[in-house]
Amino acid sequence: MDKITMTTPLVEMDGDEMTRILWGMIKDELILPFVDLKTEYYDLGLEKRNETDDQITIEAANATKKYGVAVKCATITPNAARVEEYKLKEMWKSPNGTIRAILDGTVFRAPIIVKGIEPCVKNWKRPITIARHAYGDVYKASEMKIPGKGKVELVYTPDEGEEQRIIVHEFDGPGIVTGQHNLNSSIISFARSCFNFALDVKQDLWFATKDTISKQYDHTFKDIFEEIFESEYKDRFEKAGITYFYTLIDDAVARVMKSEGGFIWACKNYDGDVMSDMLSSAFGSLAMMTSVLVSPEGYYEYEAAHGTVQRHYYKHLNGEETSTNSVATIFAWSGALRKRGEIDELPKLIDFANKLEEACIKTIEGGEMTGDLVLITSNPNPTKLTSREFIRAIRLKLEGLLF
Ligand code: NAP
Ligand code: MG
Image (cartoon, rainbow, N blue to C red; front, side):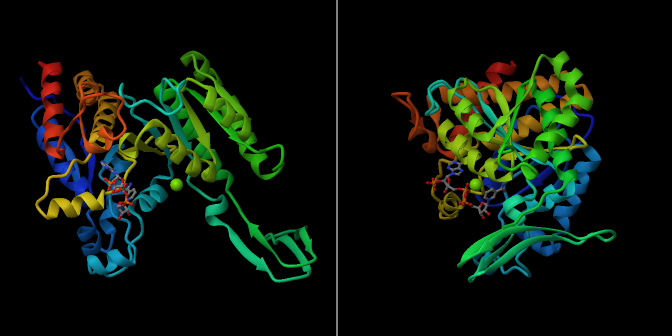
């Protein structure tokens, strides 16, 4: 068979530890034999980031702006232990944070659904995708402990014009206070990313805040979404046969539990943090969760939702076989290749990406899986495979689908 051709390179961001090992296996077994792969390669492994004073991360993010689509391996976010372990010059920032700051995106996370790994919530039939706003609120708050009696005020000192102040609370005794903010520009980007993504995957979009209680703060989120929807997206949603639905956050939670799934749930920063952990564990496993960063300009960066699986990597270094689940990383590749195919109008590449995903699902549904899934499957006779055996099993299924 002739290899499937590509016309524009993907931005390939390599990473760390066990996922870096899987990365190589996935390329060798599942991509390179079938696709005439074009990538612009950036090594975001911690050693290279340290060597380049983290410039490599910035270059990779800028390349994503140039080409439009990237695929990223999990990377170490350094802490004190890592500074020691890798003899780092500095405690470099989280690569995902750096990339997000440059692309100004929203992260969408969705579970990969397979028969035999049933969600805890019986009525969930289709994936629920969480879109988490990644700026501000409690994550960029100023906080203060109030030692005793006294008045706390919010003061806005404009560059020009009159000062504004309101009383937060007249304290009679000790207490606590916090000041949070967000930016209209960031909320607008968030809204556009969500509406674009909904059109992309043709799913309804839900959004919820606590606007009845937070009449200025949360209400602004509601108003901005409403304005952008009415002025820019309403017609396109109608044509695509999808809806935008706003409700209160507590009502949304109740409805999500009773739903069949199959929609996107846009969440404020904190809600998204909490709800995405709930959804991923209720759907099965972090290793079966895809993640894509979508910028308001329409740049895409695909990755797995899990980390570098450090514990497995140390077993691997000891010469032991691991049974690490590569599905989310494979889906990062298939997602990026499919998007490249859509943008460049390459139906064969889109078809390949779909079949690669189908091969993963068929392998697991046929009972061959990694240890993390063996623990939670309802299949009575699963076979536990090593990392490499699992990827080989997927390759056999893929060849069956392609030839
Ligand atoms: P992790 O890599 O997600 O792994 C935590 C545990 O979850 C593993 O020890 C393993 O459990 C299980 N697990 C996760 N992915 C799995 C997979 N694909 N197959 C099988 N089991 C899997 O999180 P971590 O150990 O807290 O973090 C390790 C490093 O990853 C850190 O340096 C962190 O900075 C980085 N990180 C990166 C990203 C990213 O790049 N997007 C995200 C999160 C964390 P068992 O050990 O019980 O088998
Ligand atoms: Mg969290």
